[in-house]
Image (cartoon, rainbow, N blue to C red):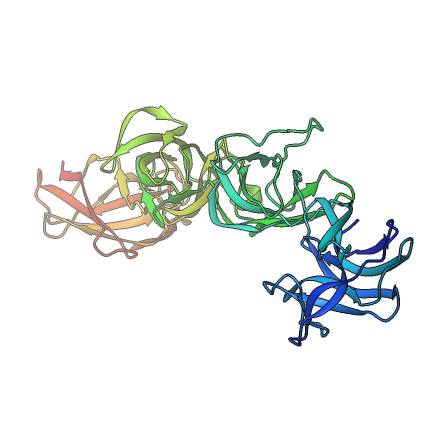
Length: 530
């Protein structure tokens, strides 16, 4: 018999004696006491009276209700209402002769809350056998209440969990069935990161949830009807998990082991995962002279929840084109060192070493600048910190500018002699020793003796001889970095010059690209009269 089902009871009674029976004193609806046979049935526990069935016999009697806590033989004919009466009866006044039988039937409904077990029912008949009032009980009927399994399992939400940690969810399991039951507990991953593992524990979060019925699935153990039990599900998050796809869900199921195996599901929700991370900071720009080595100060911060180590890499490109070890232009070597207040210490390294969660370390990138290259040229250096364990990385870029170096030399100091009224020449090499093109170099010459005259020629042939192709100049234009040009210096001696007079010529060079870059060159171009 299932809860909410009905039970029909039929009470048969027979006078097995030879003399007629009469009634006992009863009160009906508060009136005067009268004699009646009483066929009475106490409403069985876990049931509710539904109705009288058929027509009781012998005819002429009436069905009545016994109000709870009223006198034993005090009855009413109107239904007092559910829960207000505890028995029903059939009352009749006619004598029941020897051998005469009668019947009285009723129906009850098994309560929806009826627990697994037996419903028993025993009727009793009160009468007068001629010697006085007496009673006779019937046999006892037994009806079994079947188990109707039912279960609920609650949801659980955790705000955040760290990558590489174990997150615990607590779920309340309730046995809503009408008897003892046990419930298998399983979980199906929704979108927790790949590699997440799940396990179940008792409410203490320490004792594993066991398989108590040998079916290979952890379960709650036996739970009485209406009993509740907290179970803990633990999710072990992989160390490389990120917050991509948040929130994360898994479905946990409580399944009755009793047929027909009803179940309920709950949702485990992890709102966010604090994943491994690194924050690399580099300067926006840096610069250096050709052929020097400069220090670039970096900071590596472990933003993840666990200790981590980060490899240090460089490249001439970022994003998907990042190729560790490729040097940007105007750089010949890069090495990383542990930093201390901006200075490198110890031997070169390729990794930060283990950094506790939330801590930082200073790293110095020592960048060797090439000896060639145009002043002002720029290139971008990409630096990356990447965790081998978790894959967390950060790539930053810094713009390098090759410093402008400006320099001009005039080579070959010389001595010569000439007679009064004649001239002598000197060959020189003008060279741009800087790393930018000089658009205009002004040339000037002064003489220490009056009347001496210096003229500067561009030696187009480079032969040291003045010819038709060699023009008088006062400047040289667009001399590229590292390039040279040939000059002829002609010193004319006046006819009035005295024998033995010495003229020391001073030749000055000025680049109009930067008026501060005067480069005096005292070549000691001495001329004398011989």
